[in-house]
Amino acid sequence: MCVVCKVDRLQADAAERMAVALLSSHPEFVRLPSGHWALATPSPASSQGSERASLHDGRAPEAPPVSLLDVSFAVVDVETTGTSPSAGDRITEIAIAQVRGGQVVDVYAQLVNPQRPIPPYITQLTRISWDMVRDQPTFRDIAPTVVDRLAGHVFTAHNAAFDWRFVSEALDRGIGHALAGPKLCTVRLARALLPDLARKSLDHVTRYFGIDIAARHRAEGDAVATAHALVRMLRIAEDEGVRSWPALEKRLSSPTAKRRLTASDRRRRAFPLPASEDYIA
Image (tube, rainbow, N blue to C red; front, side):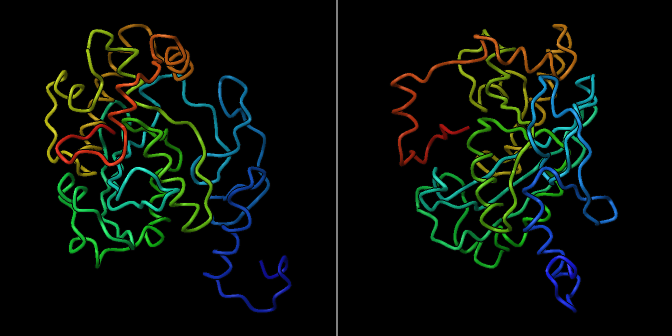
């Protein structure tokens, strides 16, 4: 960084922040295990020949392992002050449950200071109050930990678009990090693998499998429950002959895994949400 920026003296932490800001969003650069940056070596980003630039930590992605049991998943759940990060809503809690080898192997959970008030109906739903988060770290403070725990894993969530959007914008706003890489929505997975289940909400999917949610509408409880539901659905996929990541992507692209939103869906997702029921998950 001293050479690039033509600065005689540059402290290590300042140099690291500058390197992340300048290079992490560019797929042609990768961060080595040693902490140094280098030009990336071309690698197959996916079985479809996609040229998606990077995994969650800026490293050039490799094609997912052949067996689904060898794929690492980071199951994410966030609690927020509302439904739209672009409108000013922020994360109040995040949890990441890692799944490898068909098992939940690690869980990270952290309350987050959103730096803005939490609406009363959100507190009623999540039981997260301002007093609980006022002395907690901001998302910018925990962003490096979040990046590290997402790196090299398939970003997974129940209604993944919601969690991806909040985490992506929070990382970009906090440290200028571009969230990229493969992702998996367990709602779509349930549509593909549990066609006889009338509703695919987290409550219905976990009830189908007999999975208890330790704390509903809290990030850790929902993330861990989603992770266990993911494990069960991956076993169903294997039993049905879907034994690789490309095969799973193909299955999820089938018409049975997709559903158009109905007028009823749009009404239920209207803002604000009733505090008695969570239509997001």
